[in-house]
Image: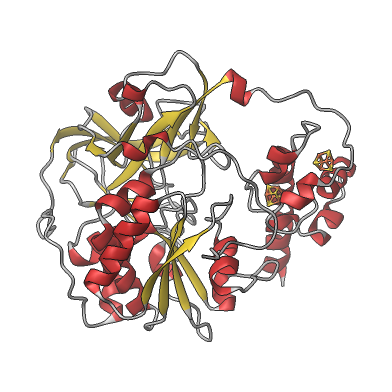
Length: 450
Ligand code: SF4
Ligand code: SF4
C-alpha cells in the first residue's frame, strides 16, 4: 500500500516509544494543586475565586480573559489557599490558584461513568457551548481554544476535519494509549466536531508505527458507523503531526505563508482533543484531566508510565510517584525531545497541554562545538516548511529583520529538523525561534496600526 505523507522535507529519528505497553494508570491526588490561569493560547483566564473559598472538582474557578481564551475548572475539591503569581516550567511568573486538596467531590451533573453515549445533541450550538463551557483546548501542543477553532469565520468552510493521531514526536505515547484504550470515545468526539463543522468528511490520521492503535480506531469507526469518518495510515516521518504537514498528506493542499488551515478547507484537531470533546459534550465533564508519559533515554522500565493526571498537579509530585529523577538524567523536558521545552523548575505545575516528562542524559543533550557552515544544504532539505535555515541564520547574524520577514521566518514551526540535520552543530532552531518572535511582533504591530 502506498502510504501517505507530506511532500517537503522531514527526518526519521528513532521513535523510542518504549512506553507503548504502559497502560494508563490513575495518578493519586497530591496535598496541593496549583492551577495556572495561562494554560491555553490567547488571553489568560481571570480568577473567580478568593482565598478561603471551598471548591468542588469540576467547578469553574476562572473565566475567559478575551475572545481567544478558555474557562478553567478546579481539578480537585478543597479550599482555595491563595491566588497569585508562581513560576511556570520556563520560569515565567503566571497567576495560579492554589488549592489545598480535601477530597474529590465533583460538581453535580457530571457523568463519571464509562457508559458510552453515542447519540449526538441536535444542535451544533449546544455542542459548541458545552465545549466552551467545559474549557476544552487543543491538546496537540498549541492549546488553542477548541470552540474558537471549530467556529470558522464567515465565508470559510471546513471540507475536511483531520483528527491527528500521528504522535510523531519520539518517546511520547499518551495519544497512542488513548487510541488503544478509548477508541470509541475518540470516534464519538470526532463525530461531534464533524457535526459542528457542518458534516464535512473526517479523517483520523495515524502513523504506521502504531499498528494496535490503527486496528483499535478502525474497529471503533466501523462499529459506530458514523457517516464520513475514516482512518488513514500515514508513513512515519517527523513532523507528520504538524497541521500543515497533515493537510498536505491527507488533502494534497498547501497552506500559504501566513495562512490558516481553514483557508484550504481544513480543521485539524488532536485525538486527545476529540476525547476531551466527547467528555465535555456527552458527559458534561470539564477538562480537568489529561494523559502524560513519563519516560526518557536510559530510564529504568519501572520508572516509565502513562498517567491520567489532574491538571494542576506539580511536576515534582508526578516525578516522585514515578520513582524520582533517574541518576542518568541531566535534562528534563516537558513535551517531546524535538519540540518540547526544558523544565527549569520542577515545582512548576502541569497544565492542560502537558503531555510528558522526559529525562535525557548528557550523551543526548550535549551539543557538538559549533563550527562554520559548510553549505551542505541538509538543513534546507530537512525543513518541512520549505525554508532555508542556513540563509535565515546568516540574516540573523546580520540583524536583517526585513530579510528574515521576506524569507518567511514567521512560517517556521519550530520542529527542529534543521538543528537535527546540521553537521556543523549550529544552533539553528534556538536562533530562528528568537528571530521568528521578533518578526511576528513587527507584523502584529504593523497590522494594529492599519
Ligand atoms: S525549525 Fe523551522 S527552520 Fe528549522 S526545519 Fe523546522 S520549520 Fe524549518
Ligand atoms: S546544515 Fe548546517 S552546515 Fe549544512 S548548510 Fe545548513 S547550516 Fe550550513
